Structure formats: C-alpha cells, structure tokens
Image (cartoon, rainbow, N blue to C red; front, side, top):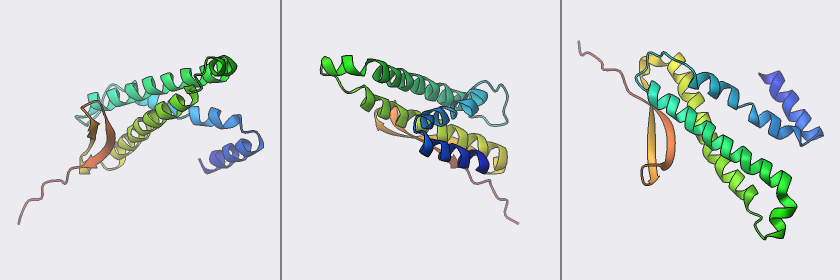
Length: 143
C-alpha cells in the first residue's frame, strides 16, 4: 500500500491528470462491499445502502466532472460555470459515504466484539447529514 501511495503521488506530481484516476480507484472496495451477501453484523442493510448511495453520488459527480471537462467552453458561453463546483460538492458527499463505508467494513472485521454500527447525524432533515462509525460497549457482568 505504501509503495502504491508513493507511486501514485509521484505520478500525480509529474502528470496531474493521473490524480483523478487514483481517486476513482476508491470505487473498487465499495463495489466489493455492496455486493457482499452475508455479515455477522445486523447493520448489513444500512451498510449496503450507504455503499450504494455513495456510488450514486460518485456517479453523479463523475457525470458533472465529465460534462465540465467536455463542455466547459459551452457552459461558459451560457454563463453556467458551476459544474465544477457541483462536482466538488458531490464528491465531498460521496467521499464521506465511501470512507465511512470502508471504516465500518474494517471495524466489523477487526473489532466486531465492540459491536460497530453505522450512525447518522441529520443536518437538514433526515436525508442530509453526516455518517460515522460508532461502537457499543459490550455488557460486562459484575462478579
């Protein structure tokens, strides 16, 4: 992983166009997790929904990015230079979902005795908010 990170960073400095290629590789573990069928954790439906929603936001972001790259002169001519800003907003939302998705998968594999679960802080209603991984403390029996 360290070698891949060093190579990716070096290539991104040499040719900045490679940067988006490396960033899009975050999709690979999400697709793997979304297609998982079984888990010991009861949050599997929420886990898969988070992954699917992250992929949807990422797909919308990529569409905005491609449209911005391909149709930039046209968008400027109609005075709508905002696709790149929309790309950044959608990628921010997708990145939060993808990173929480990966963190939950890791916590579920390595710290399942602490009962990780997905939690959500609503900001604007029940659909806009911040996902995070939380843990339940196991019940301790008094002696």
